Image 1 (tube, one colour):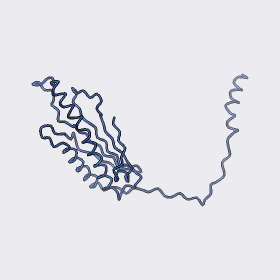
Image 2 (tube, rainbow, N blue to C red):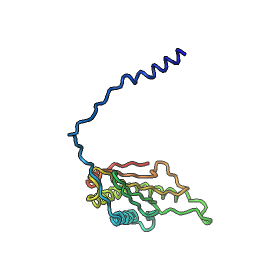
Image 3 (cartoon, helix red, strand yellow):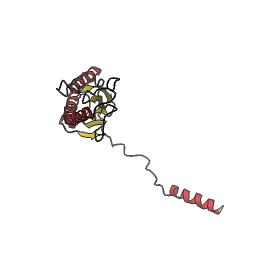
Image 4 (cartoon, rainbow, N blue to C red):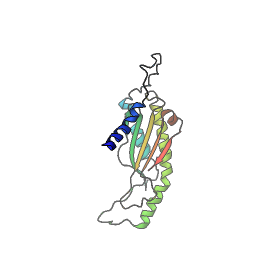
Length: 188
């Protein structure tokens, strides 16, 4: 019983050490109102999506091994955050496993991997330009401190060796930094 009383007393001690809060803060202190973003017109988001689709589809000029956009780019404005665009790309048009080709030959797999590695810098350069385009186009609706994010997921065939290859490249920056070409890049 004494043990239980001691535990209750020790548990209650912090309650006696609490500081009394003042009745009210000064009423003269006014914080500036947060800058609210305007809604970006849906047509502007669609225009950027189409521009990004075009840029991602034409990353590579090689007609024998083109890059492939795996679906349309999607953009969304998030209140009090900024704008986010996502896309999925295959840097090389890859052959599929079929009844006529049940295994991808090792020399073809090696050639495709080399092409992917060679095209990663091209993708990153295009993404930086896409960030700048997005930030410039939404400058009137998105405050300078809000984010512009572009995430590109990379597609690989199930048979490919993806060791050391990124599955996704994400670029982010405040709107004003993106306009100036200053972006953070993360590979996953």
